[in-house]
Length: 102
Image 1 (spheres, rainbow, N blue to C red):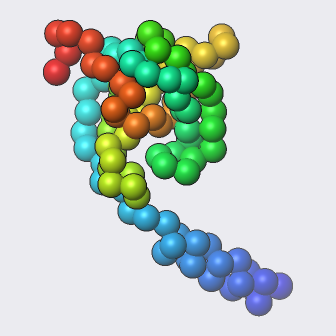
Image 2: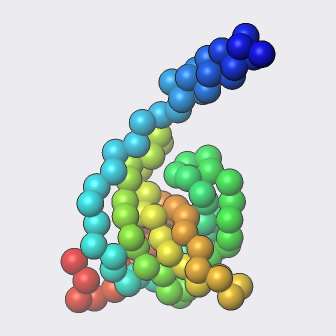
C-alpha cells in the first residue's frame, strides 16, 4: 500500500516536471471578437483539449493572457456557448480587442 502511494507520488512529480511553464500576466477583462476561423477554444494553450469552435464575429471576453510553449501569446477567454459560459484558450492573433478597451 505504501509502495503504491510512493509510485503515484513519483509519477505525478515526473508529469509536472515535463509540463512547459507558462508566463501569466494580471489582466483586466475586456470585450473582444473572433477575427478568423473557425478556431478552437481549448482548455489549455497549444495542445489542450478542444472545448468549442469559435467563428468570426463571435463575441468573447478576454480575461487573461499567457505565453504558450509555442512562444505565442494565448488569450484566456470566457465565451457564452450552447447556453453555458465556458472558459478556455485561443491564440491572440485570432482575437480582436474591441475599440475603447485597453
